[in-house]
Image (cartoon, rainbow, N blue to C red; front, side, top):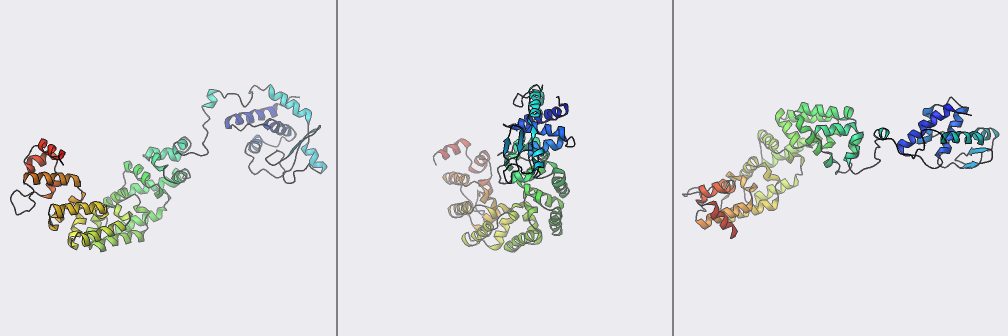
Length: 414
């Protein structure tokens, strides 16, 4: 006897099986049992059938479908599905009648499936159907595999976020996949634009600090309000937020402590403190230990006075967080070998950011020519900026009074 309604539902099931690769041995028998039951109970919808056959998530205890842990017994009269708790055949007559299906109905339905034009679920999927199937990878080491399935990732890429950098950081990929762009991200983006961050800067900022997306919007607004209360301009705040992406992750109390540290340690005024932090805001979010150590080195090892250290820090803030070894090597060569006093170094603190090898080459070349005169009271005086900053050709022609070829030959002898 033909079962047109059952076969239509079976076609939907088989097509879904082909799409999700879930066809296994014994599934045809389960489909047959399901469709035969549909003939008995037309009230069960195809959606209900699909949910229980393919997902098996939290089925009812007295479900008529077999699942993991159920024992299946086949008798001459039909097929019985056993409850998973006791793994024993049903004892009541009512349970047996509801669990036993005539074998003739099963065989008739299976014969009908063999003639179905859809064929086997293991057959090749047509190109037009296969093009619509884009499986979501259950796990991956790269966020690129999820871009096609995540609207959030797609919009972040459009903003300029570099996912290849974020995926290398622990748990960042999982964090981003859980976010909803409209609900969780858009409000932060509007806030950053109100602060003064430009559109082209949003992507790089989120690449460096994706965790700003997890911050409460009210807390972010309070932190910006605090900076404004300390008389930072709108432009200065925008610069600080972009140059130091983790700045707004700091609480108001922590920001206040950091600003107070620089003002106290260097003896700066409020205006000079704002200028220092605005020029190098990464000092606020970085570790303070290297800065404490460098301040002690300048005072105790190098012998600079407090006001000289203050002047150096305001002129070249980067010096405060520079590598201690590099600072020491540069100072020892400039002060002890070139015999340049503290007051001249203070006037040109950029010497600490210069290439030490270049300073050595030029000093030795000037010494070879008899022109290494660094005393401002003497004729042919050479200032530090000319030694450290000038391009080679200008240095040779204006300071050394020699050709660039002579300088190159001299460097080969070093």
